[in-house]
Image (cartoon, rainbow, N blue to C red):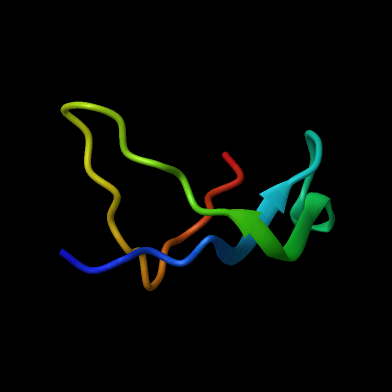
Length: 50
């Protein structure tokens, strides 16, 4: 099993609204898997404002 990094980057939704409410962060903690859970690496995703 490989070790996970302690930090990750991603967008954080800071409130209700449009794309202006998205904030890029590079200091997010990597989630820790609990019993019966897994952590997956996501390379890309989409955002839909509807």
